Image (cartoon, rainbow, N blue to C red; front, side, top):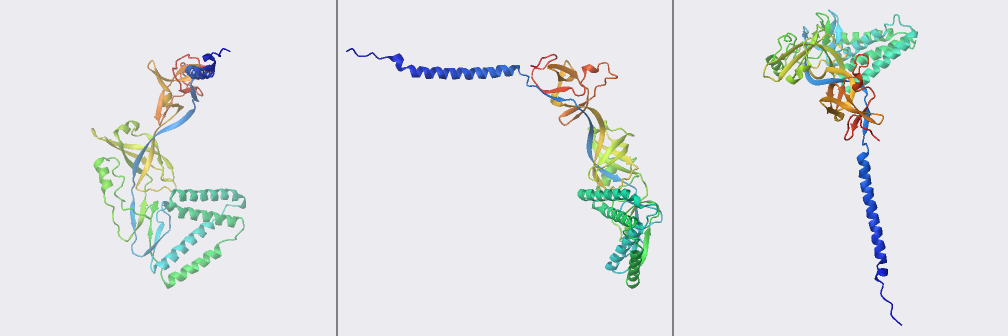
Length: 422
């Protein structure tokens, strides 16, 4: 019987099938890869955001030094003292701002505490013209005062707390009288007065007092720079004057100094900036000045003096105000934020801005078509522009400019006017 012949083709069949499958897989992968990049080359890759109207301010941060006319008040005799007003309180001419006591410190502390309670109860008893129907207004003032105490505590403005506490207690006491919770405080006042008389008769008494020679704002704290940071140098402010103030040693007062009185409403701040900042300032103009570490107070101040020298990058600016906000701290040096300009317009990412044929603008997407819109930059901030809003009523060319709610293209390739996006 003849022997069967070998069949090489049959023996290689599994290998060829494997090869073909591998080839098909590789081809498919290649087609997917090429197809992905082919499709991606036509995809828009477009990202947009709406043109929204905002108001932004150009702010410069400076260190401010406060200039005021301050008169130091002295007592005629030494001894323990008790202040009758909180710092920053406006007092009338002839008002007693402090009493001087003889006796021990314990006696003095007791008398001071009794005097404060007597003043508070006397203020609480003044309820003429207030009826039980006014409790809503009182409740509103109580809540407002309470929230002010909380806010000042969180900001570390502890010097304002005694005054605010007394105001809160006075309001609460008045409410108790009006609602009939108590008839009056006369009995308590009489008892406190008897306690006071016993202390003064047996141990100590008021040996003197300090009165305000003029009306003004009273402060018990002295920092030693009274008379150094005065207002007489406002018109003649220069670098020598400024540097001398900053390097001056504080005054040292005798034990008879009990506080100071500011008789003028007008006060100033002087700050140093650079020549580059000078273009934002104009003498005689008014600026909004914020005091971020002073209860976030914002004050409108006039720029009354600018001092600079040729070849010197240093510039001094002096602002004036006649406003004294409640609980404002006149700490000698404190940071400020000056609003140099404020602009209302559309917010545009800087990365979206394009220069086309010498014209500044952005591309927008309207439907599925790309269009170019001009922009007029008002302000540059961190990462974006504020551009002029579209003026439909007065600008005949408004249609060529960016409008409110236009879809600004912030990411895209090969953009041009009229390009269709599928």
